[in-house]
Length: 224
Image (cartoon, rainbow, N blue to C red):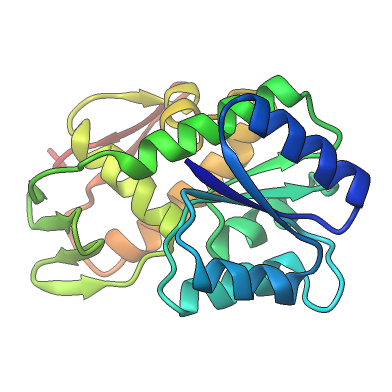
């Protein structure tokens, strides 16, 4: 498995590189956003660790450029910011997960392995529920034959709902399966993304599919 670490603090980059190499990963390092985009576009990586605050090109801009180039390598954002708006911005531009500095290295390794495992999984056949359809191969979604444009995290959330249709999903379950993350304050982001998804999936349709289970979480089901 090959990982690209994009981190301008050389001591931090070296620490991450040594630790991941001890876990038997092959690790390349870039020290600014421009170099990171160039390397990610020329080498096939299994994961990218992208710091947000980078010289020449900030991490969020770099992530957005990679996604625009159709590079779908899983990206773990490293950030000193932990406000909900900052995290949502990072996820919206195309990162798959985030980790706030300072972090425990064991947690970093767990996140890395989870993202690589998820990215390598064969997701199988098309998913259907009511008039909603999701193609795991092309990452495209339709409702009533109208294609719906979703961000990568909205897509992952919808896929989890579809694979667990008619089952009540707690916020903890969603955090663990969609973000591989568990802590109480993270539920705010889950609520934000469910609202985003509702606007795209349900807003223009009489039949609502995503429902709140008060005090517990959410469920994908057809209205009674």
